[in-house]
Image (cartoon, rainbow, N blue to C red; front, top):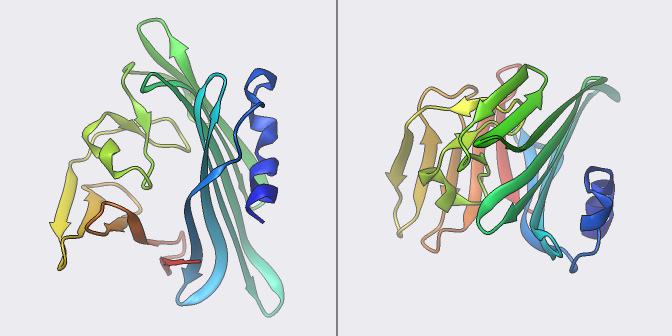
Length: 202
């Protein structure tokens, strides 16, 4: 299943970067809507000739009485070289519509071109990736739109040495949970209809 999901992302990869190691699983969650399973989120990483490549596949399918009422799939791919972003791409398929985002080095910074037009980002910016908690100290941008994230990162210590992390003012509100070893172990947010969306380890 993991290899199949990784293969689905190959159209986002340039030919020169296709030669890579077997993807390493970073995260695999079941997505629950009001307690019922509606999808999966799988994140993998691999080393290529051009740097470290991380792919994320968030696939949600909500059905009621046998009919599809919501369909969403978000595929992202980032390549880092020397700790800096070399390229980022996202493809969002939602209710029959497709939107794409591309972020590449340009001039003294990064150039984002996506569904909300083109914009410039600092050269040190990285996409928001809940699976990399160490990234919260960096300049971040939204992985679907390329918009810079300006909200303050809020950290709430948890019993046993873990921590809960959210971003002030970001909508929809989302909270990620990490254990004492800084591993991503949980996630909670709201769907577009206000329903409670949570993650459970697969």
